[in-house]
Length: 340
Image (tube, rainbow, N blue to C red; front, side):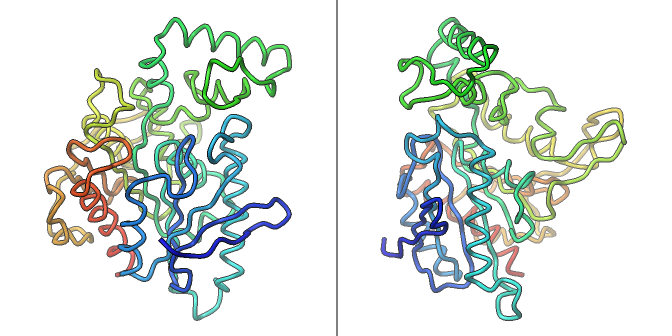
């Protein structure tokens, strides 16, 4: 993959790599924990696919990239994404007549999905986005329980809580708790129930999970979407970071169902008879789905998650060629819709 490596914030020394930088539309990709440039096996195919629809691929290097995630948090990531989008607005002269038709999409992989959702809640420039894609949005906390065991994890959580209690939340945890140096604050964010990063866990209540995707105000009795653009949620059936006892297909559909605004009232969630199947009446061009099985794609334009999809057999990083082609088709559903 060829492109340009540039600084988008010289004061903070923040850089990005952009392939096909001359194209008018921008697709910003945020990886997960330990990820940096070219971290996912499908990125080269993604760049080629995007270029056919006049999108460049932008991979920013954040302070949380590689092994930096332990010393920062989602708020810091949002601030650096603000810097990135401010840079793009200036470079693209975004408010000019020539650039008014340009599109910007934000995609988050794994923990990058938490960045994407946090951005549409708190980002300064979220209104310039045309869509959000969440790929591999799984629970860091549930995987930690699965991989470490409850006893070990809960002991580590107690260490972190004690540091916070002593006013030392910015202190680093013992080296054995994580492969990266990690503060007590970030450790709790990722691994404790109701941590700031705890967005996609299967044991969250309907209300807590609904609030990830919708702005639910029960006191005022007013519920709204965080943004007017669609969210696309893509899960891997064989995701190795999902514990064996979790049904990822069911959980993916549950998240989409809880993101239907009309199902919420001042009294809570009331599941209605809502159609989540593909149909010709939707504004999505479902005819492009040839590799991806249509019965694994669920569309409902009343949901904040307009498209939810399962890639059969795929692992977390979507490594196989057929699976990557299926991923591209799902991404193209969004590109073709917002281009209409």
